[in-house]
Amino acid sequence: GGQQQQLAIARALAAGPKLLILDEPTEGIQPNIIKDIGKVIRMLADRGNMAIVLVEQYYDFAEELADEYLVMERGEVIASGPGSEMQAKGIRQLVAI
Image 1 (cartoon, rainbow, N blue to C red):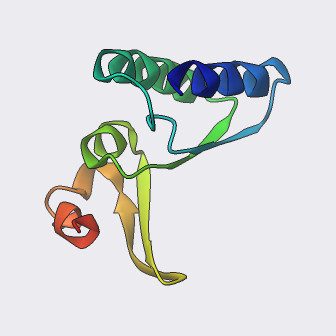
Image 2: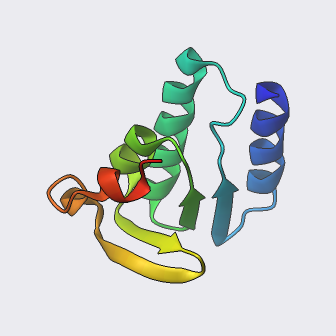
């Protein structure tokens, strides 16, 4: 569950990557830990020495962290832009099920 996710992230960071791909890092993690993970991701992004691709279904988490966003549907990009515009562009409605 959550401990495995956290360990996987730590292992990936140990290699000093230029690109970090996070596939739903909040999955299976307790809500109180999600904020801590967000802080770590933001800190890593702010360092500027690593690109981070975040694949996430938890919209609020993704919106808070996104410098840029991209929404895909059936393999096609249906929306993209600056993270600061996600709310104004109604991206939540695009990803709502």
